[in-house]
Length: 54
Image (spheres, rainbow, N blue to C red):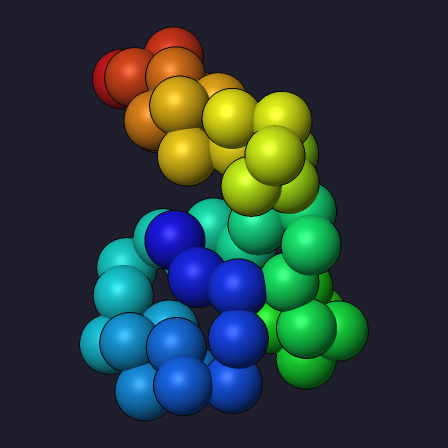
């Protein structure tokens, strides 16, 4: 999960990329899934999404 340009190298390595709802536009464009923002508990929602995929 990422929200800023410093997360781009991680996104290049990740098998499944999740961008926060408040992420930079470039991360959202490359993400496989966009979760809620950080103030809306987006990390928890992203983890829930990953668990639901299995």
